[in-house]
Length: 131
Image (cartoon, rainbow, N blue to C red; front, side):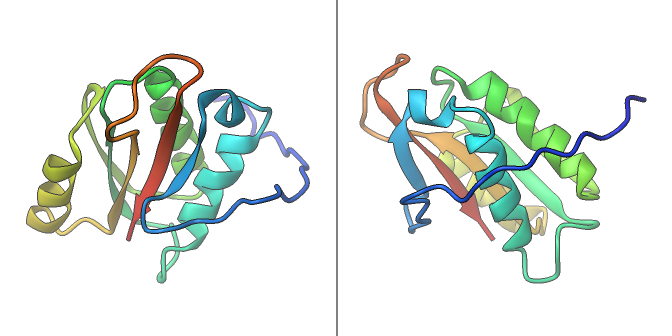
């Protein structure tokens, strides 16, 4: 097992979390530590804390989805998340994730989606945390 690394970063401008998550261009999510900081913020928003949490993870298969799923798994493990239910190849629709969160009594979920927006490297996408 490799040792944990500490990364220092600054607060991001317009890092606002809304009911539709954080909607930005993919290239914004790819900035160093941007997505990591937002995933960490979602985990810290869990009322009882991330330790021993059970999260449902997925997305609609858009560009950067596999990388984000891996980041969620790694950061979740670092914060003591006990269980992750991840869609096959990281793909899980929003209605399916909502159903699984309720049916499996999960703490919440994290989804990468862009709803009606086209895919690719430059269109926008949303990272959504549901607790």
